[in-house]
Length: 117
Image 1 (cartoon, rainbow, N blue to C red):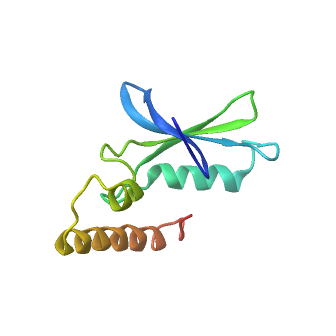
Image 2 (cartoon, rainbow, N blue to C red):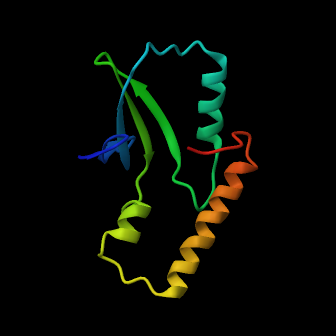
């Protein structure tokens, strides 16, 4: 696992599939009884789009942290592809990435969530 500003990131095994696992410390008590929180998590789980990593769910543990389970992007994160230096990016490929990003963002903005981030 590697340290990012948002938490620890690494591949993991979940329900017989490889997933990306992010770990976040909690700063306040978390309640699964908040209807808005549960509704938003359900909406996130229900979102499906080719240009979005699927959100599978999260776990709360007894060590004051949240573990978030995402679809594993086998080539790494967008940052890895753009800045990692392992890929040759010509203008056509860059344009394709930009179109995919815009498509995913447009989908999110018109989804029940209405936003990202």
